Length: 121
Image 1: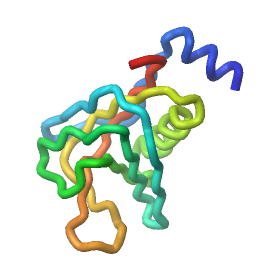
Image 2: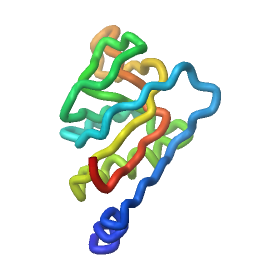
Image 3: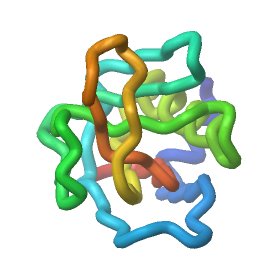
Image 4: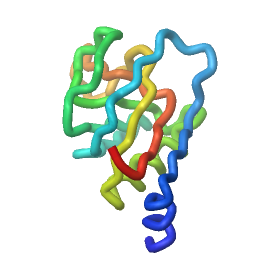
């Protein structure tokens, strides 16, 4: 934990994920994660303190999501859980929509293609 805080204090900015051949990419503001929801389908939903920019017209604007089983998914999950653990803000690059897999028809959120872990806003 001490090493993690030291890295964050040294202005660590780590970008993870895959952004190959994606549609128009949006970027969230620097935000703190308020809730993390995982589902047995592999879909991970990340709720932020403020609404997500939603240029793709997804039905849910309070979160972004990604599939942990897709390329970069494990790295993005690690970055989000690290940010929650140490209280660091994140930014996300978003492209298109993804079904959040909560059992409700047409519940989609912006799809994350990368996560940026920051040491400050």
